[in-house]
Image 1 (cartoon, rainbow, N blue to C red):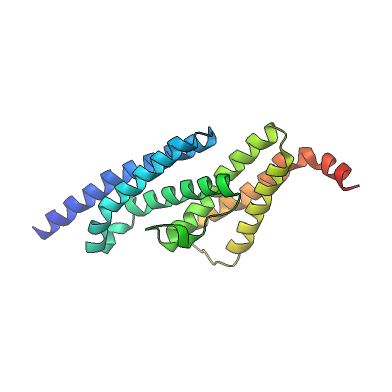
Image 2 (image 1 turned 90 degrees about the horizontal axis):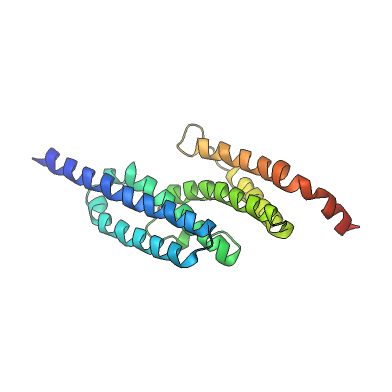
Length: 186
């Protein structure tokens, strides 16, 4: 009986976490399209859906890991991206409601990929200042993450992707504008 109840809770968390993850992904898509109102609605719904699962996760903490944690990481990524677009800086972990440190760290790493896509769009619009600001933030994130020893943690692959993102921003996004910077500097 106890195993059946645990399995039912687990299934509910898995199914509902999919909704949180989907809403968060949709919010990121909305943010890239500059539909900030829709993104906020999607993220608010994702948060309220998350809150319905918190009592189950608090009752059985082992249920946090897996689907629920992955959904919160996606939610963190979306909130961080939203905050960056609104305020031009990284959202702090303390500002993330119901998100644990590792979920936040994963969200920041995933956010760097969204920032790369955003930088490409800004480069296409020839907005050199925004592209440089994106690159500088990714470099600061990289500097902070160099202090961690990821070894074989779940964050390792994401950290490796961060290194690629930084290199991509430098080579593919910023390099074509190098000549304009040299001219501005002189």
